[in-house]
Structures are given as C-alpha cells and as structure tokens.
Length: 243
Image (cartoon, rainbow, N blue to C red; front, side, top):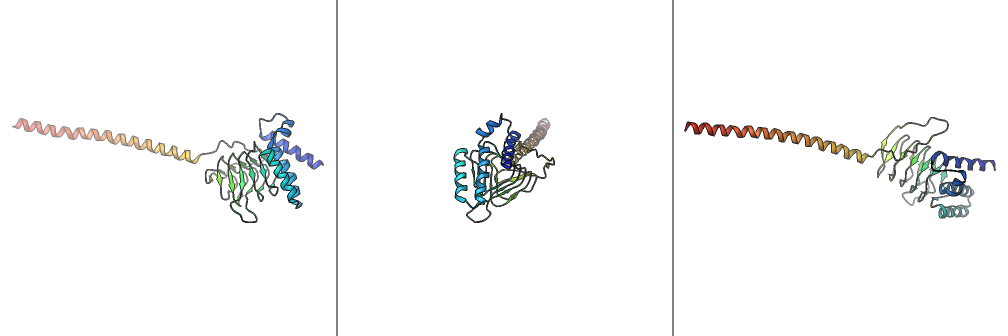
C-alpha cells in the first residue's frame, strides 16, 4: 500500500513539475488524461506480467476509450513518465521507455512490420518527444535526446542529440547532460533548429551576393560600353575634318 501511495504521489508531482497550467492535486486526479493513462497502464502491465493477458488488454482498452491514449500493456515504462495532453498517443507492445521521459499529443512509438519479438523502439532517460513525432522500429533512442514536432525517426539516435525532420536527422550532437540528482527536464521542444530554414536562409544570402556581383558587372559593362562608343565617334569626327 505504501508503494502504491508513493507511486501516485510521484506521478502527481511529475505533472506539477512539467505543466505550468496545473492548479491543484484534484485537477490532476480528475482532469488529466495522461495521468489516468499511466496509472491504468501500471495496473494493466501488472496483469500482463502475470500472463493474464485478457484482463490486461481490457484495462488498456477501457483506458484508451476514456483518455484517447493507447498504451499496450506489454510496454515497459520507467519512472516519472509524463504525457502532456496525450490525445492520439500510441505506444506499442515491445516499446521500452526510460525514466523522466516526456511525450506530447500525437506521438507514436510503433513498429514497422509483422515480425515477432522486439519490434518497437527503446527510449532512454530524460527524452522529450514533441507533438506528432513518430518513432518507428526496433532501435534505441539515447539519453537526453529531443525529437522535434512532426519528425519521423527510423534509426538509432545516440545520446545528447536533437533530431528533426522527415526522416529524422540529427542536428545537434553532444548536448548538455543533466548532472543534478533530481533531473530537470528540458521542455523547450519548440526551440529546435530547422535545417530547411537554415538552407533557405543560406540560399537567400547566396542569391543576394550574386545579385550584387551581377549589378557590379552590369555597371562596369555600361562604363566600358560608353568608352567603346566614344572612340568610334571621335574617329568619325576626325575623318570628317580631314575630308
């Protein structure tokens, strides 16, 4: 009983740590689908480990009906897991999630085929997966990774990286590590680099430089054309005078 109370207390505290909109404990208990989904999953996973698969799936199914979040009871989820908003979240059977992970609405931790065995991703500790991101396949996402909104990750990601795009590309490597005893999760998932934007900016700068050089060449051409035009005129005048 003490372990259950401690677990509930920890899950409630996670909401206060990562959602500035929360106002009270009662609000978390009655109005947060992410909290409901993770508590339901803890119960369903207990029955799944006891090989009571039907009961486990029934609990999972009921939880999905009320929360809009589908977590297979076989998924392994670590401590202080937080789902913000949560609608449309799908977590597959063989997915493994570490401690202090945060995911947002529309995230999928899915597989890529019908093969048996491990077919869903393993997520490390202190990972943030932004809204609409898809992590598909049996590979590992390292600790302290941030995955940008709408990204599609199809291969392993080393620790301390930021991934954006379709397919996902590493745009920051060896980011700052969390060294405190109590991990402070970085929730600035909207402040991620955009490689497409950076490419367009570089192209615009290159085009501007080419336009400046072209304008300079045109100006020089006009000056040279004036000089060349003046010489024949002088020649024609001299011929006229001699005549």
